Image (cartoon, rainbow over all chains, first blue to last red; front, side, top):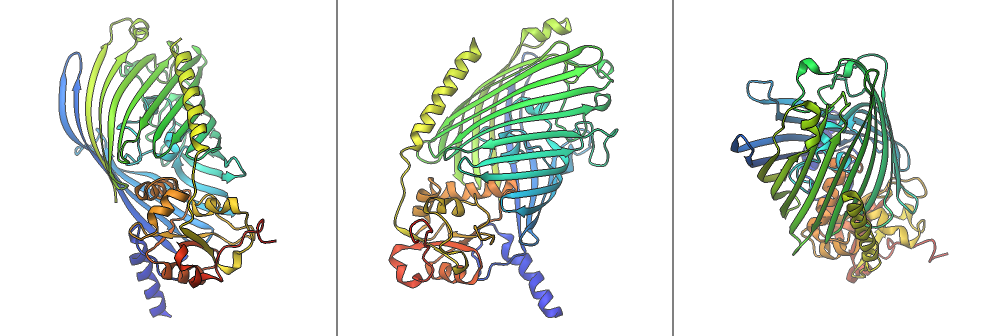
Length: 366
Length: 150
């Protein structure tokens, strides 16, 4: 018996550790797969008051996926990522830890910490720079999108002819940490998508959270506009609603992605701020490996917004992705970023207007 | 004004996308085989959905166990084009992406037709593809569709 257990343990460690390992005739129901994702980057930034040129290590992502029984699986993702509060400027972070139970056909229940399935980008790419079509995420990810939720999720996928899918999530909100969440309020998300044609996906979603004391937790991904001083940040509660629409098309020739976000951020003192973000990406694949692309990104928050603060950003870029294999690619882009005049008006002094950036990113997944 | 132009552009692009799909082609250099427990249970147009991980359970409730040609095998290019409508790299990235999203169990990549046949025979709910020229090796496993084999 002991020998049998030992043999099974060794097999479960050795056999599936490589993604494309050849398979023995009898499939092992306890199957564990380990991957490692990461990226290295070079940046050249030309800003009105300074120029910067530097190499940097990006997030280093340890990923594990394990099938425990036929219906139950585990997914864990721990990342060592840049963190400017530490001496090494890097810190470990638990990004996902979830147990999934397939209770009926393509319907599942997921518990744990997960990527908030709010739009195509956060659900499909999130940390995986290898999967990103461009170097960076849309601007809304730094200000409006709640990146993670710890809680319970009901999930269905590929249902019917239209490949309908749903995600209903309730969990800790934007103000939470991995340990706790202020108050009794929980965030709520409902998201629906269809895949009516090959390569095509449309998704709509709604997110609600009551943010106690207007705090952004460590994994919300939210930050305030850079011109907002800490002493002036609103300390009351915020009613946070977010509507999102995604349209994605990724074939072996054309690529297209649109992420549209409309946000209502309500406070007792300044009313409801209406914020908007639009991201569009288009690429065309040449000779199977080269994808030249363009992207436009716009983000505007209202002058009475208390969560992010007044902000207007536009980013226009051209770039090229070279896919060396499915496990490694290089992306290069040249971007112009401008700050809208409405921000200068709202805060009463001039903001830096335009900056330019040149980036080279090497992304890999092992 | 700018947004109106952008959305007009998006609409045009989506029309192009929809028309592009009408010209998708299939391939008959391979045959689909399944474990005997699930044969004669699906419609022909559904078969690719099982091989792409879009349907996780057979109609009789058995979990689908996917086997696909290893990227270095003879059949990989044909299967990538016909079932995944991409190249071998694209097929591999397709699976890596789905696994990263936590949506599917990894498929089993197998080098030869003989190994695929042995795998499908041995695993309840298994589905795989072999080269058409090896039809005689797997006559009892060839998929039978319920809409074509009443």
